[in-house]
Length: 369
Image (spheres, rainbow, N blue to C red):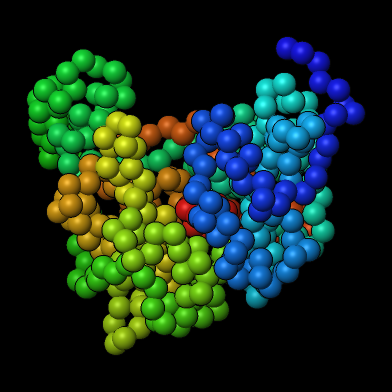
């Protein structure tokens, strides 16, 4: 590997005009790049970014001459915790060309040394970044298991075909019939049913004004660290797929008010023909097991009706969603622990060391943006 001169490599703030170079760099390292409009949406229309103004950097790049050889994005998010409003910084797309690995820590230093940030949350950390992010002081979120995902098969033949393709087994379509039948029989004989609950669940593809009332109730009743879930923020967060079959918003409501909701987001793997939907958020003010069971059952039935192969939830052993774990018989190992945090506030650090302070989900950070 050729040596790289320190005089040539410069660190600077990223700009929206850097998109093409950043997307090319991400693609060269097998990261999925967002289309330009979706990438800009991480900040444009983001209520927290608009509140903070232009002093908030969208990220940083490493530049060698005219070429961008490293980058990391920086997304601001509003959280609440025990009556306090917090500014959270979520990193995204931390990637550096191999010849410039020695400079990767410069991007981390800029990110973690930001002023006026209460908490740093990163929940899409891959195996390559985990070592560096922990060396810079980040710790594993103490609630849940963020090294695996739980899932249920909702269409066995289609799942079998995609699994055979992943394993590069010859004639996957032909073999999917007997394999799918065997999986179906196994699940019928050994699978667990969701607890029955007399709860009406509605499916929609947008967030209406009832979500403001629900968020007001939830934020006042909860002692957990929570990302803001007002209607405005939810519509920004999921804006790229609103009003499509790529986003299901399931609600349990009485008397015109929401008692609980769950958001499910399509996460297909087209190269293998896998059709998958993931529960990325679940919230209820009380009766978590009953509401979660009713919402997951409706999603399971919807998957079967639409021919979706897998219903999944990333992050296991979480108190408010353990109904999903008990129901879903399969586990998928992730590349490593994906959810880390850091705060420079000693009192906040003390409080967040307690697992009871957390209610983490894929709605946090950039995992479902």
